[in-house]
Length: 61
Image (cartoon, rainbow, N blue to C red; front, side, top):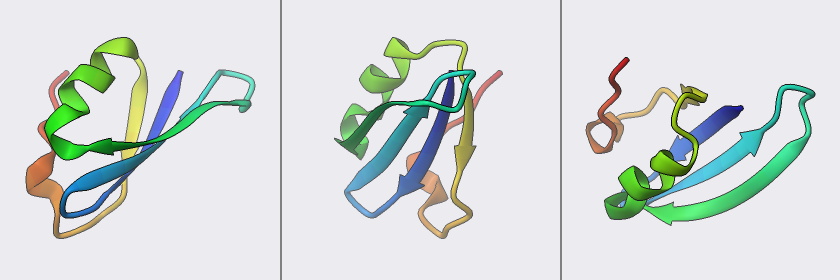
């Protein structure tokens, strides 16, 4: 699975794609709830838009 994340001040727009490039889910998530959402896709690779709102995200390997 792959996540594309566009972070805004209060929410993030997230697109989830499978290995074949098919859109699985597209959702708007409040930044406060990103951890809960990410748990659903644990192990997926993520791409984050380069933005000044990076402080909403904490990435770990």
